[in-house]
Image 1 (cartoon, rainbow, N blue to C red):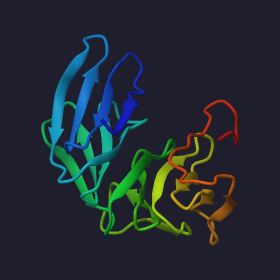
Image 2 (image 1 turned 30 degrees about the vertical axis):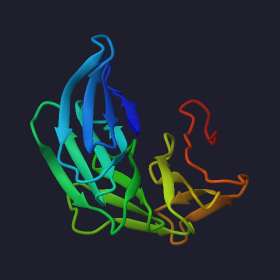
Image 3 (image 1 turned 90 degrees about the vertical axis):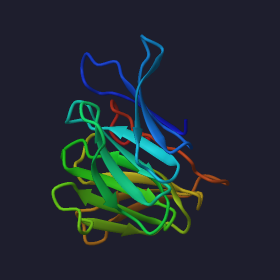
Image 4 (image 1 turned 135 degrees about the vertical axis):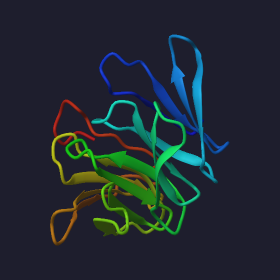
Length: 189
């Protein structure tokens, strides 16, 4: 498995994983086995994330250049978004808008997607010099997000601003592969 995420739904002890075998799997750790396999991607699944708003709904981002939305209660994919012209390495769900997701890709761009209209992204953020490895929405602000990249940087963005890049942090001497934002302390990365 390349990616795992715990369900955020109260009372639900489920995990979703994404794998090199092009599948996402639903797990119940109490049972210790896979409950369901989701097929449809044509490339490795690099990122899986549960919706913080819709119980049983998760997104997956893949090397097949698509972002897909799934529902554990329904067979098959709910929505396929051809999000980039490159492998998508990360995705995250906005904590304040059930219809907004962001993707980060090998094409060095971050794109915001409104699930009600997937014809074009609601924002595109450019600035990284190499592939974007991880992207996370802020748990405290609806329009803030952070990204990290193989360009050794972590960048902070506000997609609502005309100049969305807020800060570039260059403290790493190698690929920056992961990041997370504290749910308890504002500004802690």
